[in-house]
Image (cartoon, rainbow, N blue to C red; front, top):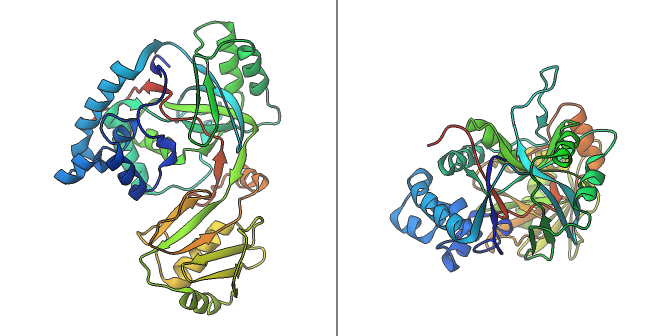
Length: 380
C-alpha cells in the first residue's frame, strides 16, 4: 500500500468485528460511540446521527472528521509497505499477506483473478460502496484464499517473520492473537507478492466489501491473502423476525410442502448438511431437507422461507446470523444450519458458480483497524 496507518496500541473503541447486526451496532455506539472506529464505519447509526435523522451520506462528513482525529491520535503513517500477518485462536490459524489487491485484476485470458464465493445483498453493497467512497480509506480487510494445487505463501510468510518482532501484537475479545509486521521494498517483499498472486483468489470473507470496492470504482481494496494453514468454516443461520409465526404454524407450512418435520424437546445444532433445527421461544423443530437438494442455505431460503412461508429471504423478516452470535431477543425462530464443507465450497467455486449469500463463515479473520489504507478512486 502506498499510504497506510498502523495503530499505536489498540484499536479505538469496541471491537468492530464483533458487530454485524444493526441493532447491536446501535447499542454498542450508544454505550461508546464518540471517537471510535465503529462510529467511522457506521456513522448513520451513532446516537447523534439518529437524533438528527441523518442518512448515511449526510453522516459521512462526521465520519471523516472522526477518522481524521483517530489517525492523528491513535495511528502512525507508513508508506510503501505490505504486512505479513498471523492470527491464531480457538477457531483456527491464518498466516498470510495483508496488502492492496485490485478487485478488477484479470489473468492473461481476461478472467478475473479475484472471484466471489457467494452471492451478495445489493443494498449492502451499495451502502458499503458509499462508505468506501465517502471515507477514502479502508478500515477493514477482505479474506482471500489462493485456489491452486500448491501453497507456497504460508511457508514464505513464516520464513519472513521468523525471529522478527511484530509491529503490532494484540489479542481480540475472543482470545485470538493478531500480529503483523511491516515490510518495505526488497527481494523478500517481491517474493511474497509473487506467491500471493500465483493463483486466482477466492473471496472467503468480504464478498460485500469486494463488490463495494468495484462498485465505488476503486483501484484497490485491503485484503489478507492466506491459505491458512487452519482456516475453518463455521455455520451461518437464518433468523425469522416479525412474522408472528409459532412452531405449529411453521410445522404446518413446511409439512404442506412435503417436508418431514419433527417437534422435539431438545436438538443439537446440525453438524452435517441435510437437516435444519428451528429454535422458537416456545418449541423446537427438526426439518429434514430433500435428498440431493444442493446447498442447504439455498433450499432454506427458497423452499422453507419463500415458498412455504411466503416471505422474501432478502426482506426485513429474514436476517443471517453467524454461529456464536446472539440471536435477537424478539426472534420468532432461528433456523440453524450445518457448516458447509470446504469441499462443497471449492466445488461450487471450480464450477464458476457462487454459494448462496451468507452461507460460509470462514475463520479466523484479520482484525479490523490494525492497519488502515488510503484508497485511490472516485470520492464522494
